[in-house]
Amino acid sequence: MDDCIFCKIAGGEVPAKIIHRDDDVIAIEDLNPQAPSHTLVIPVPHHATIADLTQAEPALAGRLIGVASRLGADRGGEQGFRLVVNTGEYGGQTVGHVHVHVLAGRRMSWPPG
Ligand code: AMP
Ligand code: ZN
Image (cartoon, rainbow, N blue to C red; front, side, top):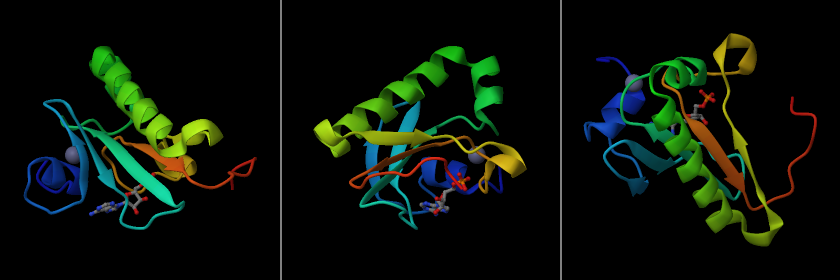
């Protein structure tokens, strides 16, 4: 996707603080962190939403959650962490390339806003 910021980051055209990279998945520091540790786990191929990704490449969706969970466990330790996948307008998604937020380092509230 020509105009997608996460495709550009995955392709190395736009800089980001890379936490993890393999052939299929990258993880970066969020530019506008909402917790002491806030990372984004992103599949390298472009899929708009978690629903699209799961339908097209279910094994990759599993890998995405696996990397996110491992990062969360690293960052959150025994105190825990939160994974979030905002989806669509009502879900609060602002970047149209699926990504998992990994939030850790503070107590999260519920319900979310
Ligand atoms: P969402 O609103 O769930 O689609 O999440 C998009 C996230 O991407 C937000 O938390 C933004 O702060 C983050 N973001 C947008 N552009 C960049 C960028 N160039 N580098 C790192 N994080 C970004
Ligand atoms: Zn993209």
